[in-house]
Length: 231
Image (cartoon, rainbow, N blue to C red; front, side):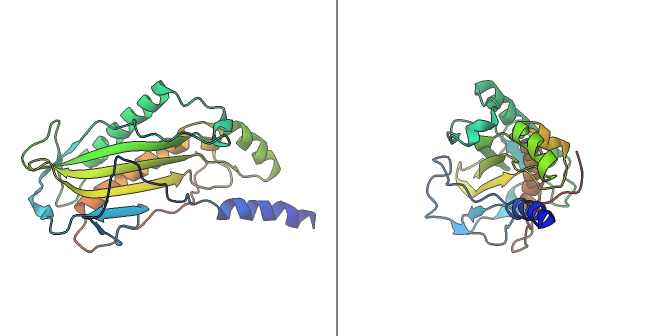
């Protein structure tokens, strides 16, 4: 029985690893003129304008990341004791933009979009907004690692994005996702405030490259909620 009591909390923690979808903000606005894109499973929500000729875009401009739509944390989320102030949010926004820029510059797809420093006539503009930042509760995880050998809090980040036609200024696609840090038995990122958040952003950047380079109708799979690395 004692071994069962030890294993059960561990199973519960590992099962509850996928973050639920977040309510969208004013950044995305209404979706009545858009169609759901069920093939894009990497994000909780994906919409696109029907009839867009995607092949005409040859370059991509990644705009500065918005932080004006950040949701207030709940009382429980604030118990991480990590300060989410203007500077920390600005730093995360700058990290997000640079990470997306780096991912698209490293893109090796055959229909690669060249990253430009200002919009061109053939550009699609990627606009991003960080809408939720919940730091990992490092102190709580330090205690839980002793008890159940796994972290019980991974923090979460939510993001919204828009693709805009640079020549017409029309929004042609929208996406939204919320992710928690990946589950693993022991991970040093569980003992820091923002390491999981940065990993999530790196993965979003990689997935965004896949989305803008995908053939019409092809599926963009979500990543695994688990990882084997300990760092």
